Length: 168
Image 1 (cartoon, rainbow, N blue to C red):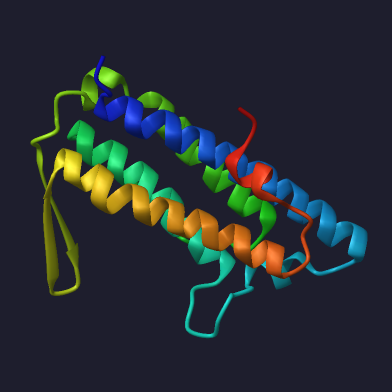
Image 2 (cartoon, rainbow, N blue to C red):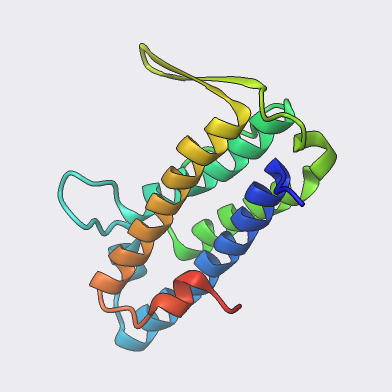
């Protein structure tokens, strides 16, 4: 049996965003227990030239919702990118998961050769559906999830590999 585009995308996004939500809960509990302003975590970076935690969340969710929409041939939902609290970030995850759950396998499967073009300022990237998912979205999605994990771990939140990967 072959793996479909849907199977390789939507369930993975939903699972990993659920793990991210659980990690964020641990960060909130840590901030409360240690009497640390949560804004410190939301604005934390691994390095001065890297995006803060809030932007890492935004990009990860943008990757998931953008991928689902583009593979399905529907409009990509637009979010304001104005999250400043743990509650805001949790709401963004919930909104993204709800959108992902609204996209069916029949909308995505069979679109391995759908042409997808992305514009980044004056730069343009073109992919076919399968390459878009496997070569662009999944690496970027996991990079930003991992960076989020690393920011929180670096700042003392007690999380480990199982928090990132989730239960099997």
